[in-house]
Length: 299
Image (cartoon, rainbow, N blue to C red; front, side):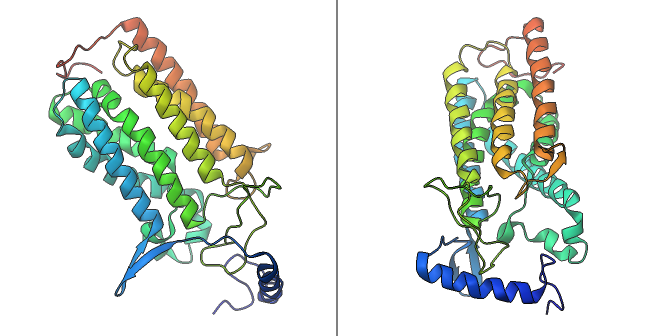
């Protein structure tokens, strides 16, 4: 039982009143339906967030296999790398997400494990975990990190875009209210019968932005002769896309850190600056990998 307050801290009496108003509103207008559970097999529930995450992972691996052949690497490398990155990325993504919102998990720490059911992953945390896993994988396999990173980059953009539709079906990461015709009403909290006002589907904005970034990467990948620049270009393109999407989420599913700037916008600015510096430095070094040259040397 909730006691005096709901899970969001709102008095139960206010929640019950809002529920009554919401039921009447939904009878008049209808409401968006989030498919957090796609289907059930006996006691097993198949959740949309985890399903789309895995579909994105598989699609990214398949695209990375094509990139491996283009770079003269074994097509088996992406799957081996993907397992490393998936485990490290999910752990780091969840860890950062929980740390940034620890007050919501402190009373119910077991919910830290509810990734597949409720979502809640930080892309920036997952990126850090994935990079660290990629560094260790490349070291163990005797490969250049930058070559491995370029191989995985288009698949990363594709997988991220697909996974964002999991956020849409899950009803998380939505934006501010909008009068635009594509506004969607989301549950106020997981499994809540109370719906938001029509809101920006920022999950879709993120997905479309990621697919646009992917298109740019595929257009320029053969023009970049220095290994590592494709990966760094991805970071430079992703950062402003995320910063713009955050404008529509700020104050709703994205918290302002200072003067209306969200935590993710600050992280994106740091990533953009670091990637830009790295892109320029790699260009000056002129480290060019020809097809089939994957042997490790100083990254």
